[in-house]
Image 1: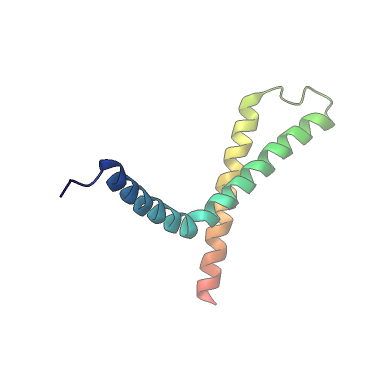
Image 2: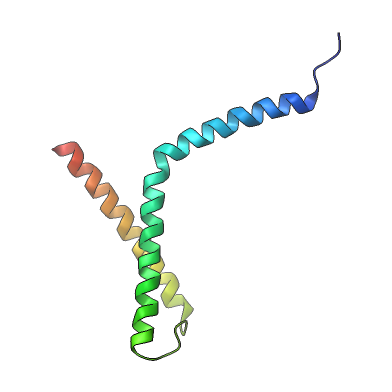
Length: 89
């Protein structure tokens, strides 16, 4: 009998790893979605504030990065708080 093809072994391990990552993503996806939404709101707020003041929209890029970070952290904090409230009630 011949030895199994190394590519077929690699394929089976790849599918097992892919399944494990998908299962993990299902449980961890919601906080990521909240963080993405919070970052988008932070970016949109900064762009809108610059547009209202009639200055270049991307005038200070670090402000946009800071607003995105604050939005992401705030959205994650809100998500965790909501989960705690659901567990309490």
